[in-house]
Image (cartoon, rainbow over all chains, first blue to last red):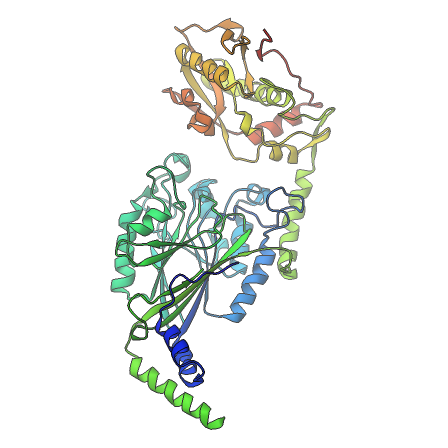
Length: 303
Length: 254
């Protein structure tokens, strides 16, 4: 993948170019720097095995077993890695039709996923079908804008979760798409959909201001963007603040590189999505520093 | 060299102490998409874990349900196709007894969508996999009650689109200029004083393929019967799957 530097005026870059050759400063700088890797998938849709070699679109791509090898090699490189999924784990191959999602959850547990949010297709066997598979999942489900009171999922899905890696606090919350019209009522039952922008504002206030998270990640199944007015990841990024990264799904959008959006206070937010079916794995690396080592708008984004 | 190392350590420690109360902030972000190709080796343990699930599915999928003496494809013909007729007729045949017993009324028309025929049926054994191929989605059969006036909209939709949407229980003949020459329901002209029961799937009823007329109803009956399962049951019931193209939807030459 080609990488392009959008801004590069950090203190780090300044030091390196300014006193280049004086290894003393740069090496001491490195010891203070923290490195967090976020790996992510979305809309895997029960694609456990790679596509057939004669597939018209994705010949011999994807597969959980290869993804495992890839993730393990990245974890070796940086143990401070989070693995997340943005929903629609279910539906798309007979593995789901035959086993109802059991194998998907068991494999995601073996891959040591940290958390997933819920997509509309995760309700395809009804909220009861989803609930029945939860014992197979050794990872969290996070959804902030679905209210599951009066459903079997009450208390089983988190509003948010804070992960601490190498002393870095990472707050993760989840946003789901409006179910009415996409999923039949008999499948989602009493699940209440709440306004994603309002919930995002609540969550960022909680995670950034109260919990003082160093990074805030939104796991979204809203969709990347729409022609009409429907809320999407791009709109959400513009209408909120204090989100560092939106990991999206639903629209099966293949991006060459993460999209950079300016939020409501002019700060940059990354929006990423990895197509679908496990064809790609998304990787975002955050390098954090003590605040006074960074100039005002000094975030270098290389995507 | 030794001295240099020591100096750098001290420097690092001093920075650490002077900054320990400072909050962390993002200095740099990198992002990329990594394609999962066959250059990444698979994990033997995981492969072994998946294998029994895959074997069971393959075994079930290869169960022979019927025989197709000829290959059937939705691109075989215009306006109506053998495979589309088979799908619509299967829905009519399998759904009618359930509908009659539940509603004490008869089913008039079946309408599905051309785009919903997701694969061809190859000559030879028709298996469970065939049913998954032609209908990979979970859509269920629904029946809607439509007014005679709305049935006219249904025919106008077909006349306008001129697409071989699977149809049963009705006949539509278009003139060479595309206008409607004849439209029949159960062999009779539309009676605008009557209401009709039309079977379709939940996707189309909810506005898929812009068949908006399917939403103009106060009665939607979910048959709780997945179309794929319906086709599996239909294949099991038949020895031979040999549908033909007929006159149910045609356009006259002149």
